[in-house]
Length: 212
Image 1 (cartoon, rainbow, N blue to C red):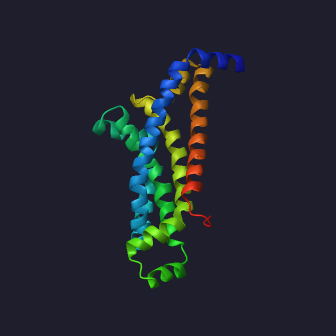
Image 2: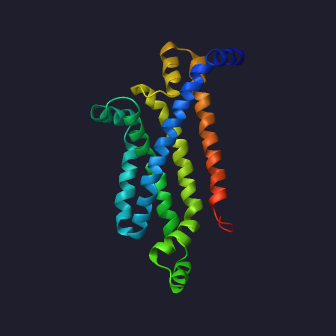
Image 3: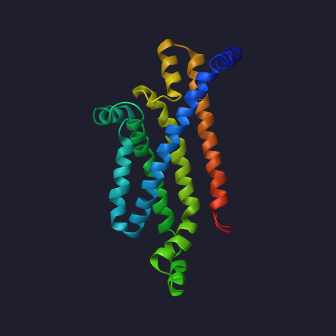
């Protein structure tokens, strides 16, 4: 079994490399968009806590929608290919980013914020120099969860012609070819672990010393 899998990987190395590159591009693009939306939204609901239940509840509701149903809904509006796939992945990865950003900010010790205000800091300075650095480990934890989620959901992109490693998985299922299924599934799993590890290193680099 192992020998057959290794031989299959060698024979399809070029195809697997292309599909892996597509998988990375889709996942990273969706993650960047989700961060660009989720972090500011988390900051906003931390500033206006009365809106947090609605926003987080809405993000939770999106998570409850079956992924295939969501794809089926998006295709008539956005067509097939990478665009609806990225939109779907973004929608499924927003929750941990929004929730962790909000949680990290609202759990900061109020005495620290009062001290910052006492030093004459503006709201923007307080957010940039105190709140975000203190909340960063929690925010990064949400981003790491979102990254792993993005890699997983990107496998569905193959169903609407966006490419990625899911193409091997679904083709293998239709052909009842275990080697082909594993050729898509194992690189996707390794990719998820690798992205999580890279983001962990980024977290250690950008988190100020003394903050855990």
